[in-house]
Length: 450
Image 1 (cartoon, rainbow, N blue to C red):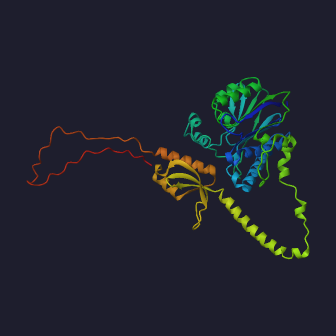
Image 2: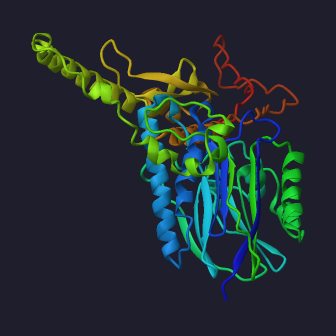
């Protein structure tokens, strides 16, 4: 029997953020949530690009082919983000999570990267379908901390895997059969990062979809609403499924631009649903200006034009090469020392004589002197890392090492005072200086074994 989806979706800024960097999409065959990051580096653009790219696969697709289609679309989205970053250095650092599923009436093909989540509520029990790609989750997997400790960890939002233009970040893929009565939920960490699974389970027990979504949003706001809130809840039903196409958050109003094009905010009347679907393809092939392509000149005016054009082209090639090299250095990071503080640097750790190839990107509160000697030497020698995320993981590891190796509270020991003075030794010669008594030991500092 072929099943259908009945769904409700919602996205909002929350109580703290100034804009919505979440995006989402819901349709009869596709449910997706993306949580952008990067702040001024355009996290809203990253999530909008991801949704704008993935939503194009909305069409009936069967079986494991759903995973192939999803994976291909996600890689396309990642490539588009890479092109935008390459064309505009100010976008460096932007990225997005993506969690979504295709539905063929029998099962779902699930794709996931980042820390947004997908849940299944079946027969009164909640099951998490995705695995967070975070540093804290890796500590839980290794048995170093508990789930309860992970929820309160200061680095719980540090992502290890995300769509940020890097070629190695592949999504997790899985197939899962569904049945009538199942309820699916997709959300950004503005929901699952603030409220516990038992609260989510209680909300999903509400039969009415609208009321269930309202409860999830209300609980997230009650916990502070410190992040954007995006949630899609879908029931698997035998008939009368939804046929509405819903675009959420930044993807509904963020203009997608071609690499190198200036960013601008479109008014609501500037584009329709149809133009939004095709705008990226149109911008990638902008119309040419015929007057610039064809501008005939008299022969004497063109006599010296070719040599000048040749020199100009050589100059442009040289500038473009320097620009490309500079842009590449902006994608490199290392951890080092900025005066007495540990810092993340952007650029190359090696400098040319008289020319610095790096700049301080982010100074940490961690002092170099707080680190064990081995780590102090590493920081002073500079630690090369493959990405900004890796740099932040390294900072977290250094912080943990400093905390682990901090000196323990001091203890003091003193020998007991003898009841009476010992008698003089009969073997001492007259007039010889007495051997000085050993002084009582002072306070002993217990040093860490690091």
